[in-house]
Image (cartoon, rainbow over all chains, first blue to last red):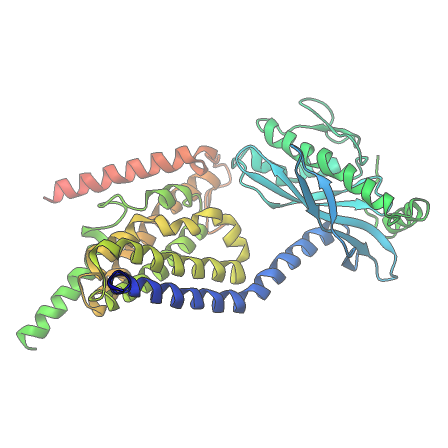
Length: 225
Length: 206
């Protein structure tokens, strides 16, 4: 009894403070969590819409796609179907990430409706070296992915960056960041395509036609090899 | 004005001014070096970090001052950390909700305010020994001193690294940006030169 009394005498303030601060944090989180979630969704949609201008809105496919992210670990990816105002699928977008030079790089990637060609990518979060690695956000590098075939991409240090194919020309002085972006793409995009094909979500024959239609409608540069 | 109130006003003024210059947390006490070096590549993130520190410093000083008579000596650091961590988490949630882009820019440095020595130092040195008014004034003085220093450092670095201030171009068109000033090396060089300048000024004054 004496020990318990001593314990309470010594620690009552800590116990009460923990309880009060916990309540305060719970209330703050309860109030702000919907806003934070909405911010993230808005940003994803904004970036994805920039990549697929024909899309009117993005619809979650309903279940997360499980992929192997290396070293025996799996990752759940939420895939969104980009839908035009005539309810036709004009592409797919998803948020993927991996290790960069300085820190993790998070990307929003968009592909065409047939899952054959990249519509491009945008950087959701990165902490690459200013003036070098952070050029993965620039049009020079991002532009090389617009229309590049979904499949194994290769990074070269020299070549013609304007030629759209599976060869990506690295940013001068930022080869590791350039390779990181391609490694993220190579590691994940093919797997997502396989899963969607297996689930019958990609109607290859029709999707290809729709993709071509939407590109000619918007004058988009997807598939301008 | 009675002697007592004049004395109090003097104490308040001294407490406020201490944080701004005489005991400036960055230039004099060399505290909070981690955010000072990490988030001063541009003025906007530096200002946001400064505002977060002012918020946390103010709230933690108020709470610590209120419970100063109840604190057990061997549990005081635990209580300070608990208080600071609570308000840092609140500041982080507010940033993520209302300025999400800035929250991403600052990254882990907002949660790292928990281990910012300025805040725990003020809780220990001032708030746990003084009343609420002195604690609030100390928090405001130290917070403004820290924010001002961060903004000056960030201003120099952003100007030289990009030719811009607050993302507005101010340098002539032929100016070649010094990319290094936006990197960690730029932070060390700028801080070193500023500390040297502050020491030189103080020496020449004395």
